[in-house]
Amino acid sequence: MNPAYDKQVFNIGTTHRININELAYKIKRLSNSSSPIVNVSYVKAYGPGYEDMKDRLPDISKAGLMLGYKPQVDIEQGLLTTISWYKNVN
Image 1 (cartoon, one colour):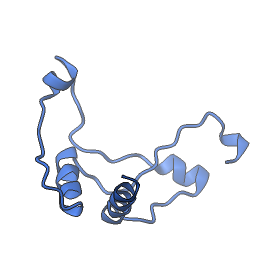
Image 2: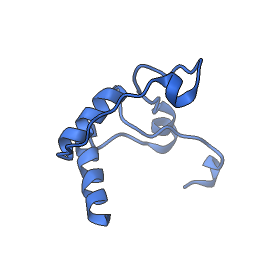
Image 3: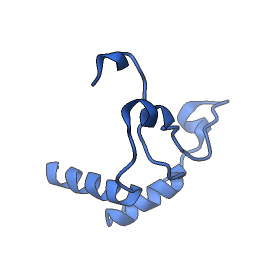
């Protein structure tokens, strides 16, 4: 990377909005998994008072502006690539 970007933080992601439940079902379908999806309450996982965002959509404008970053792989292809890699190393 360019030394001018030292200590910079960049969000890298896609412009596709997704919530964690949708992502879990998508991963399950694409990996042909028979594992159950288990929902755990925020209180049980993190304690009282924790709030999370409903869905995720990273702001990638800084990465686009400074690095010329543009997503080139959609979420399904990215997941398929990751699932394939994981299955090959395990």
